[in-house]
Image (cartoon, rainbow, N blue to C red; front, side):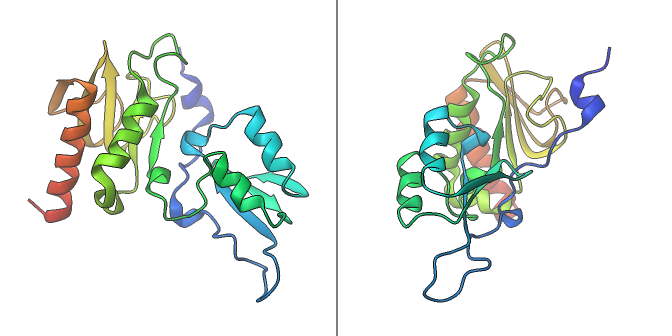
Length: 196
């Protein structure tokens, strides 16, 4: 039996270098033609979408899980910030991808979003040295079934952690609690960035 991701593939994650910075087609003293917004893990509520829609003339969806607010109102950036938007293409949260995890999937056994955001908080500048950290709620890897620089794969409430692996691959660090997995990722990224 084929997995849907095998049939259709997956979109590239919202890599910061692929997102426009919002300054295109604008002139000095004039409002930008669009404002680029993204949200952690490409998720936002209907209320957030309605608020964004009220702050521009049109919303365009990009392949990188970002939104372009066309002809944004003067307060569009403030509205987006108030709703948790990522407004900078250098925001490290754009390097995180995670499935819905526990509560969003019958197979997930961990809060993948909380774990990924904890990595962003703990690893901080070290994330600058990687393209992607993937937190998967199970070995299927629905959010990103391919190889990532750092991959956490959940099983029975714990994580397995590996470098340059895809979910379900054999890994050197197994059975880590969410907190220990976050600490291990921070240590791995330190080792990677220092060449240790």
